[in-house]
Length: 282
Image 1 (cartoon, rainbow, N blue to C red):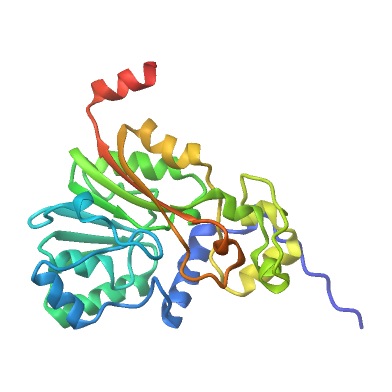
Image 2 (cartoon, rainbow, N blue to C red; image 1 turned 180 degrees about the vertical axis):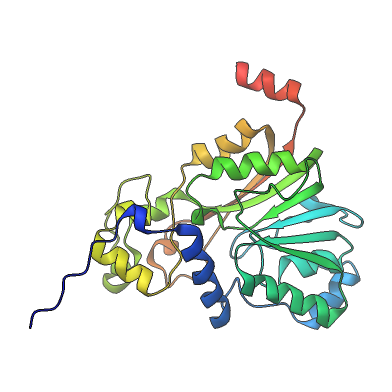
């Protein structure tokens, strides 16, 4: 008896928030670079003022980008996993960890309980910070995560809204060239071949068979974003860019990472409405 054909996966059938929430819960359970809590020795050094955080896979954020965080209100945005949030809390900041994944937040809570740290954990969508009042934070720390939302301009606008004037946004993101290639094929063959056009989205760029495979593997749904959206979007939201660096991926087993840095970090400062109006008028 022939098998019943499976219906094609369509955009309307995929709830990226619900899927990514469960996908990150599963990834957190497996562990990995973004899901491995810091140990007690790292927390103790942070209490003594010896600490650093990351926005991208390898390079630590320059100390001048953050300065003294003691008594500063910090939002760690889509940064759960027991790493950045507890480190900043140990360094003296008042920290809120905001993440879509309960499992990632629980790792922050575990470190906080283990080390006697005070911090708040809130679950939610990085593009919707409506649970926070305007001008609630001095710093937003947003490691490479915005490939999991379809429209990052909402993220930048929300970051601008919840930051106080002069507040700092530290963000990491992947270079959009990453999304031109099928990396499974490249890693198998050792050859990079351009396969997709930009902007890329798992739900529209993959055919139904490969999209279903990705969903069944419980991998997060990803979306590419242009540099116009990543950097220009921050400027349009009212930020002034004050720092930028590039970084390599975690290791060079990924073919593309042998040839170019694939991650970017930016430091941006919330400006006055006058400066924003003048910039848009140019």
